[in-house]
Image (cartoon, rainbow, N blue to C red; front, side, top):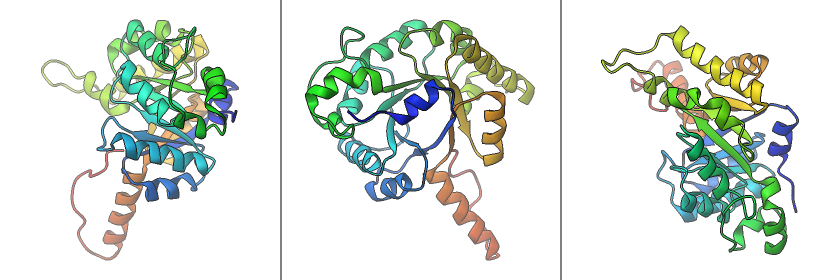
Length: 265
């Protein structure tokens, strides 16, 4: 069975920088899979990508030698099972605020006796270049489980969540964490307060020995965060890369680009 090089690299302390896929399109996924990133996450939480398209994207990414991950809409058993059976080599689970939510997600990604994932299907085995039977025996060792910390509650429970067996990495969604930190009257956290919250995540990861990461927007930010000890980092998305480059070209032509942040990630 083919190994998951991203999971192995994170376990050995090596940073892994990938990006997000927001387009439900096999052709753009294929191009991005050949760009050189070690992993690509297909975003099923905030993008209109259906199950069949997601499975085709997983296959396209894996065939290029890249690791396909899936961000599920939430940490439910049925959603996690479906993306893994569709060929994802790992999951990213949003809004994990409690230890119980973490346990549910981890169990759904593992076959018994480590978890409660249902045995069945053969598409998932194809991206690991093995038979279905071999996949059932060894998938627990290769599936990457990444949980997202996106709220002050999740940060408060960080050490207990990160210590759970089967949690391979943690990922911060900066936008959600920032908005979750707002006061009841709408007051936003200061940059210092927000950074302090991020540093609590990093400290919890170092204490528990769990790789932690976050979404970034520039290479300089990636380098800074790696220097601090972050490991699982996303750099923008294919959507942001396209829109940003297009706006830069429009500006260079002396034309007025559409105002506003069209691609947050």
